[in-house]
Length: 386
Image (cartoon, rainbow, N blue to C red; front, side, top):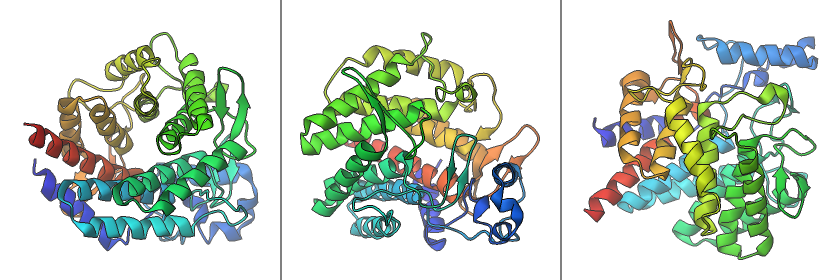
């Protein structure tokens, strides 16, 4: 496996696309569908999104869905570029990262005087109905992590200020409840549904803010959110997706999110209070979400679809916990199953009988670029230590 050749080819393909692309959930950006009466029906919006998500054929060009610049995808690419900057010190990666960060800044919510950001598409789900660019936890916290990477890499104070504003947004608009021992953060302003990985993303972000701000409330938010989600963990180490009855599934990449976020809280706050939860969660994850050859299962109860998101998050998870060999095997498996050698991109999913080869920027390419560069960076660190 020539990792540098693959990563270079992938990076050049991203550049040729202008770091823009389609998204799994962008069907409602269709200029045709928006002009029909169906757009006013929640059920029809869900059906339209699911049709685009599940189809192995890409109807977006026909439906006039434009390629977009997705802030979460851009944040992952920024972090990947900074990984490459750390490996070789090439300033072009820093320059490109700053340019992409400026695009994220341009997408900020215009009705707030503090920074927050959302997806560039109208998103319809069973629990949420969310117009494009509505700020939310996922996109804002990913942007905040990228801004903190930029700050730590180049010491430009404006990126820290944006990150602190995101912290204020989360505190002001997404805090659902708080007690002496726990705090719960939501996904989207005004929505009460509790999603466990969302709460831990907030915990990880506040713990990192605390490193830079030394503000006690940032530490308390990180500890309280981590404690709440740990207390929701099953005895066998698993977390369902959320608290609602229709959120009780247990999948691969959200489990990875939880583990990586909880480890970040542990490291940033220099605390061992969540060690047992992490150990149980990691044991469940390795036992239940990967086959012997490291093919990632989607759910603990089933393999299909084999999804590129699970490869990328799995690489990130195993590197986080120092398991370089599992990360390497997972990366090799992703290239064997999902890499297009000619077009230099990763497929979306493999079903039982066919592959979905649609090129998705945020879901597939941005995540795998981040995973590839993390692996590259860890490999360089191992060589330096030896």
